[in-house]
Amino acid sequence: MKMIVVFEKAPRLRHIGHLDLMRAMQRALRRSGLPLRYSQGFNPHILLNLAAPLSVGMPGRREIMEVPLEKDVQPEEFLKKISAALPPDLPCLSAHAVDDRHPAPMAQLAAALYEAEFDEIPENFQNIVESFLAQTEIPAIRKTKSGMKPCDIRPMIYGLNVQGNRLQMLLALCEKATCKPDLLLSSLFAFAGVDRPRSLVTRLQMMGEKNGAFVPLETL
Image (cartoon, rainbow, N blue to C red):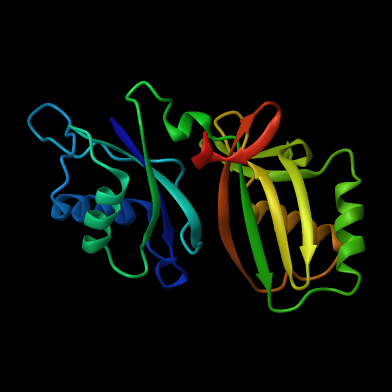
């Protein structure tokens, strides 16, 4: 069986990188006493998978990891044992068991919902966002493994929603196409012709697709 676990990476831990987060989770799982499944070979390690890495400096409200187990464990017992081994700023929020044949969260990932909280926003920010979205193309320069490449990020923006001094962004996050919040925000404020204000960006939720609609990844 596998346990699909939802956890939070609190703002105090936002500068911890992906590899350090993986090590922290692996140490906690080892201390938990749970019947974990390990890889084969000379250097066995816990078969732990996170749905998608978080950028350094970004908190995550509902991050998802997959933990393969050697035998059945009730979700309540799993949460109790793993929570006792984790720090308060890295809490596990929920867990549910799935069959080993269940697709990995990474394979089901389609998009993510982010929220940017700004120190200040331009006047008529709502109108700026609407005009920005009305464009048929949004050219940008994206960093890739082979260098900086021009791209059109408009097809990767599924929704922008202004709420006071916050902007929620539903953006593509999958193997075929990914739009990072930093690239979106840089493009938005360049379009507005104003300096980009300081902000804290949080990943609120990872999303999959079901019946043509985006749904929380943890529900698939």
